[in-house]
Length: 147
Image (cartoon, rainbow, N blue to C red; front, side, top):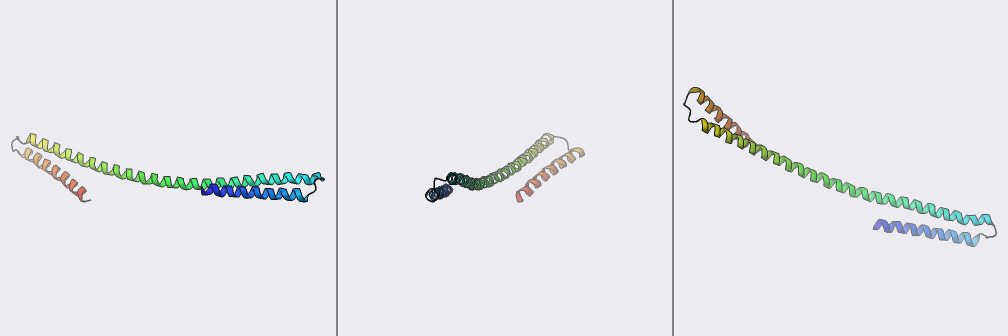
């Protein structure tokens, strides 16, 4: 809105200058001399040149404004992507913990199925391995909880 008002004031000023130039040529140059009459067309030419230049200035102002809006949108987009990335990281961490809990559950299931076996040495070693695996997974979950 402010830029449009600025542009219009420039254009009105240019048209005002054109009227002044036309008035000067019309009042002070005798019309009997045709070469002097052509000066009026030179004034018209300068008017359109000035209006075109004003249009270029106005388009630069509009492009600057659009560039600022684009930068604001880009920064909002970066913030949204960062938030999304953080959410995905948290989701991945939760899924990893679910996998660990499932692994512990499976190990306990295997241990429960094999507990009826005799206390032979190899079965005892298997039980110790199951317990070690459970302890390792629990330690990993604890260390994730503290970090």
